[in-house]
Length: 379
Image (cartoon, rainbow, N blue to C red; front, top):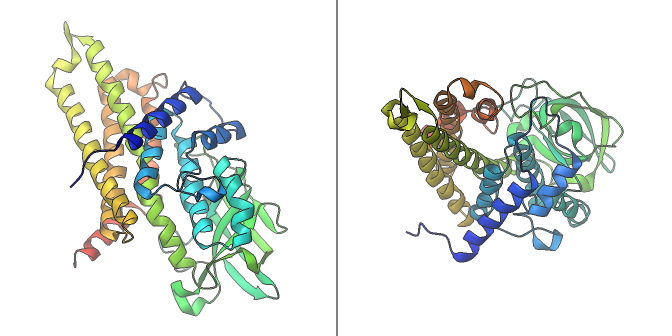
């Protein structure tokens, strides 16, 4: 077994981390608004948005493991976790399925802009009554001459209020369950597509999210991904990338929190001693390190299985569960290590906690991951 990185991989990580820190030198302050187009273009220049996309469209053609390392470096170097999350969702839930299942003309038209950051994409899958159960979508795609007519509403569309293009899923044949779901790509300016106002959220505040409604929205047939009825398989393919590679941003966040806690525990003094000398503090930091390294190994293994051409449902579910629950526990620990300062916005510790909470919900809740795990082990 090989646990090291080659020279090129180490150099790529260091370069991405350095460029990210230079591009986003300070944490977003109180009242920070949504990300800007300028922020998005910076991520394109850094290479995050096109990391796993084909080189012929401006990407780097990296595999899942190397892509995860890029996302991890950006998550560590940029304190605006909402921005990094939005970029990862754009890449894995939208650009990846277009690259893998879109027609030649669709790939040519969209992928260069998605890789460079000139376009922003939103994944419109979740519905008010269909979150984890993606086989019962109320949004309907009715076949007509030349394509489909979409009707329905999607909720919690990350990047939705800012997106130029949407990857969405709709039911074509209600009797076929998941085999009746079809994936489509819809431009923002398509007549009948209505973008709702941004939600007010607990965390990830810089990433706008909202509802998207389709009212007699015509989508040409060349915008279908993989053919009619292939939507469920395409969605699961993108979820593999998302649950593995997207969550690498939380490894980067944990690295940053750990660095902050160690520095604070060395400098902060109470009762005439550095607080790092108290076991109540040092052991809490040790647990943060343990969670980070355990989750990191699981995530790398999940990505390795994808690169081997045999993505492991079990490995990906274990990875997603370990990373999301681990960052939530470690962010709460960081607040405690910082004490009163951790409750204030100045150091960004409380923001990390708020940003960690949704990780246990999106891309399949922790409960869904546990169900996948026990199914895979034969229970």
